[in-house]
Amino acid sequence: MSQILKSVDDPVVGCSFSAKDARGGKAVPVTLIVQLCHCHKRGECEWDELLDGYNRTDTFQLVHCNCNSLYEGQWCHPCWFVP
Image (cartoon, rainbow, N blue to C red; front, side, top):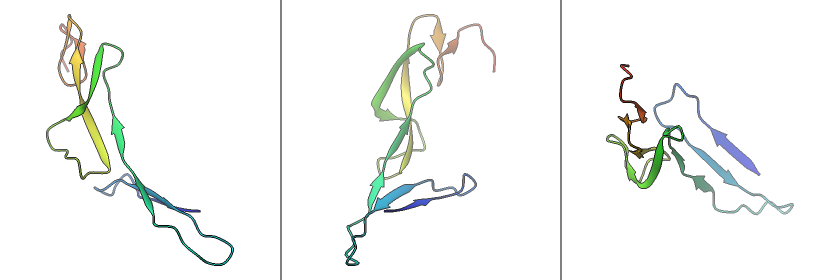
């Protein structure tokens, strides 16, 4: 099995895996899709709704948070929090 990991400095983050048998036969690479949610237990992750700037073809995606009451913003900060 081989893997490809790109640097965090690379604007395209990705990871794919493929297998190779003893006879040299190779499987088609499988690309992993990573979805990240930063609701911090202050809301629910909306896995089907990506943040602006991300699309379904990206291998690294940030998803939207549906914040609980008293929390707001992209990462569900307390309403009194000023970033």
